[in-house]
Amino acid sequence: MRRSRRNRASSAIRDLVQETTLTPNDFISPLFLLEGTNRKSGIASMPGVFRLSEDLMCEEIEACLKLGIKGFVIFPVVEASYKDKYASKSHDPEFFYLMSLRRIKDKFSKALIITDAAMDPYSSDGHDGVVEGGRILNDETLEILGKMALAQAATGVDMIGPSDMMDFRVSHIRNILDKNGFSETGIISYTAKYASAFYGPFRDALDSAPKFGDKKTYQMNPANSDEAVLEAELDFNEGADVLMVKPALAYLDIIQRLKNAFHIPIAAYNVSGEYSMIKAAAERGWLNAEEAMMESLLAIKRSGADIILTYFAKDAARFLKNQ
Ligand code: PBG
Image (cartoon, rainbow, N blue to C red; front, side):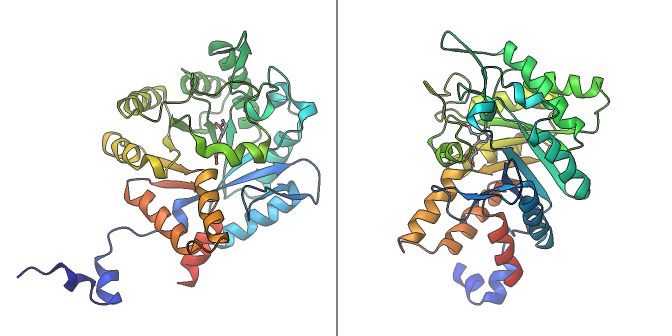
């Protein structure tokens, strides 16, 4: 008689038949950069995550590298006085974010440094595009995005992460990079990025929530799956090196569909709200944070993600090391 429990009888057999394994090579750690030195500030809705100035961020990157984490996405925390309608600071080479990126990349030449290319952290409207009469303009946004991506590439970072869901952003950025001698700078595209409630804590971290309305005219409807495949076809054809699904846990079916349909790496962004839910429940003693973290990350990988962006990167790598 076939008895499935025989293959679960001891930890030895369970380990032997385990189909999915996490390693620190799977993780990218998102970091929030503050201007200045020796600055560290907590984010109320993301316990354990801090905004860090460059010097402290370098220590953090060092600690992550020691644990085997090799990829980092760095987001700028932009003070309100620097924000404007056209996200001008995003491509000002003197802006602290771009200056820090260059030094960080110089210092950690072997790490994979990724930037986020979208207007929202720099926009006084809190939107990912140029706003006119309450509408988010696509092609006008591309112009700014191109300048932003070029300024970021010029710092030496390895990959640009267009995260705004504007049409043609990948081809626009790819062309500009190629024309300016940055054909080796990669593009990790936020391909299927849904208009999600799970970004709330991130918008607290960067103070980047939309000043009016929502992001539904550019980010995707959570009800749609075929549309994610269309977005992936477009990004693939426009030259994206990696396709990303975001958020991760509520969209495992999308990760799986893209993994099956495309033969380039698939990334999943285990977003701020997904992190905060586990942390908040654990603070109340309602679940075990470590177990819930590892189970979530395993599920994301099992669904087909080759790369996982997660605020748990360091905790998970530490857990794996001590196993
Ligand atoms: C910016 C951006 C967002 C996130 C990553 N890049 C916020 C948004 O689109 O509103 C969210 C990340 C997270 O929640 O962890 N375009």
